[in-house]
Length: 572
Image (tube, rainbow, N blue to C red; front, side):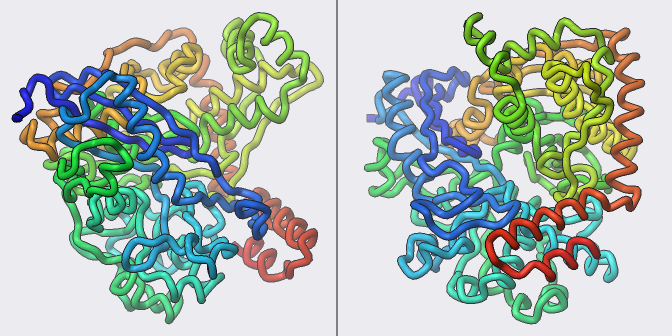
């Protein structure tokens, strides 16, 4: 029986760092009817492989691909139940993923980590976006590209990140050639999960452009790759290249196996995969030039559209149609935001604070926020650098690290907590000013994510950036964005712009700058900028040297050779 268009439903699934979230949405107006979250059983592997497996080195971050399939098995049916929805009314499903998250597979999509012979080999597992152990390879890619004046380099702000496809693949080749040889496909997780849903491997235009150095229809040449490592020359041709799917198009239809996992009808369209940040612009109907969308969670990704192509120093990339057809899509980001706040609370806050918070029925974050909100701007006397997970934009260097200046014996935990909140806002302002200086001005900051619940943080961002802050009101912004793309793939709307106009959810100018506070933040930002340039651009090198010393100590404790790693980092 045909479905009444007013009753048609779509499902969006958002794969984050620690969990997957599914949402059931009414296609006609974007109303969210139900949702569910599934926490990855293996979370993020940073110390060792599962079940006491092989130890991991510094800056590693891996995941288990089976956890992603379990999101389909558990979160999607739970979201349908939460919505009280008839699965037969669902006309399409869309997904998005953290990026760049890479899965080494066989030709049929089987992850190498699921093969018994590679179960204890770290390089056979998924490399999560925040896997930063490929920084030496990224350094070599950048040095060679700059020396050769590669035409694609300016499209990425002059630097390729260690988080991206080529650096991670080169690390795999050089550290475990056997696993590299067995790998027949190097697959973005965004495309791998669609492969599991449909049986079709379609490479999405967003990941390929921003993370895979695909510009104007071309990847880096075999000659360039051979100069990095002769065994890397055929990487694109043999392990990466794949037909590209347009955003909002259908990658295929739901297979019988995936229908059994999800409880959805066999044969409904499955949208081409996408990146969590880029898909969220549609959720806020923020697709016009000047509207920068900040997806704030463990990290922050900043995306926006522009009418013209500009070279922005340190940006993550600019891709024609990378967010929506007809515009140049720009991306930048911060590798650590919520992670920084969480790390501070879990490792550096005295037990007394936690006990007082619990006595008042608050989380430790809420308690510290309340104390910090009582301060005047600058009262704590601190400035921090938000590089605890390296710098994604605009320095593109994951060997950089966090810094706190101004601490005294009078410094309290709430002082440091507020300084860290402010540091991430200063990082966002650095990105915004860099974009503006390159001819891509920002007029509005549209924010989504769990951190929007912190009113102090949002006001700080508005004051620091001197911009109005609009909020995407969906509790599951990326998942809603994926549902919007599913509606397009299902033919409910002709394109993403039309779907976003009807289904997007945003409240404009919820926060506006306080001019007096903004003036004081200008002074603090000037101090931040001097620290930023001294440690990030000044050639001091202390942060890299400390990383090298740490790696040497870790390797020594594990009984491994240390000289090569230390020499490489110090010289880098």
